Image (cartoon, rainbow, N blue to C red; front, side, top):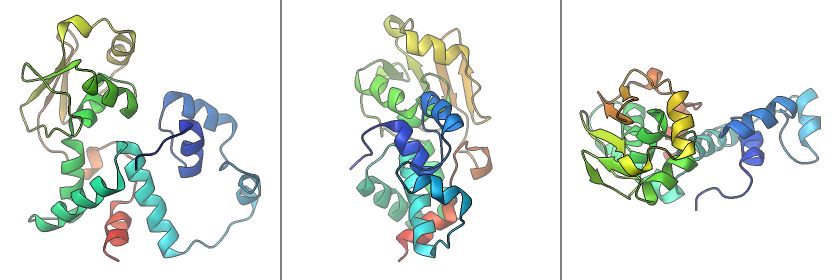
Length: 202
């Protein structure tokens, strides 16, 4: 199942800010949640390989807000393709419609991106798509439909947008074009993909 519950608590647990609000909370309370969180700051603990891999897998899932079954399917298909498995995995995840909406600056969080897609506010090459996992290909254009462009969350996100190099944002048209499938170093996620691959290889 996907992660539910307070995003700030989840962010503190994983050590990554999943939302702007979570980032503000983590500035004040950087330690993990719970009664043992404070103690962990001053006493380094030995972490097993399994725990390290598990945390990296959870971080990756949380940043894309996807089910465990979806992640397993993405990993399986990435391993079957030619080339480097971590690169194939990141290509598949960054090709998701909700990920393009987020990275392109049309939404402030992956949760808002998924909601915009599911509620029918997003067009792909001029046609409405309501499936967050819809695959975007290079040169596809993802846009907010004209009647939805003044939604406050969209306006705020576009105003402060700074897309990575593989995405081209047209602020006037409120549209994003996927220029190419990105290498890992251009994707703004916090995760050791090799640890994720090892976790699912067990």
